[in-house]
Image (cartoon, rainbow, N blue to C red):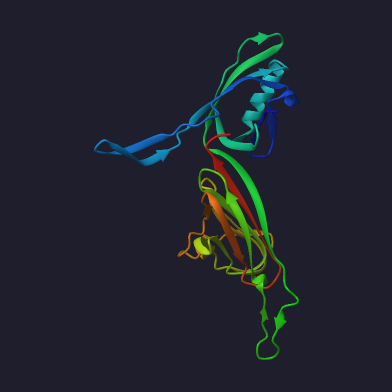
Length: 273
């Protein structure tokens, strides 16, 4: 069954269904279009550039509670500085939208019908979160006296992820625990594709690197205080990581032998839904 709703920056949802007494009488604009640029070689053309322009999604809504429901809808929009449109046919995906037009029709059979136009600001997206846990290995071999070090594979961990979308997927990396110059590496067939490395040491912290284009941040939280650590990145690395379509290994190195967690959220992107 089709499921569609709006969600604002506070996580507040507005269901376009009987749940919130707002029904959809018609819906258009869920597909996609591309702006393509070609170069001509004699009578052959080669594509050199493609862009996804801003598209329009049009909803015809029926407010079952009449004018009261229509006003509640406007109140919801007034407290929403940003909006996501979630749509589930087979898979639940969302896109970033701005409402550009709201019309109000006449009261019909105690309901108000309204045409809503949304600017579609992104491709359809789906988030997936995976966690790499580095747990101290108490059974690792310890050399006494001259070599007081633990030799163990718990200094790094790895997961395998498949991006089945049509575009590169931004990655939000959250590392919690002890770290010493941590690294996150994207690998393909054991070859490095991209890498993040931060020159930061802490016994207990939360480090966040978010590569999403509209919210790129590098922060470190210790003792309840958060600071930017942009200047502590290894500038020879990419650091803001994006995973290409396909299957890749993601390796995490904490730099310490303590228990540390690395949570990674991948935002996969699709042309349609």
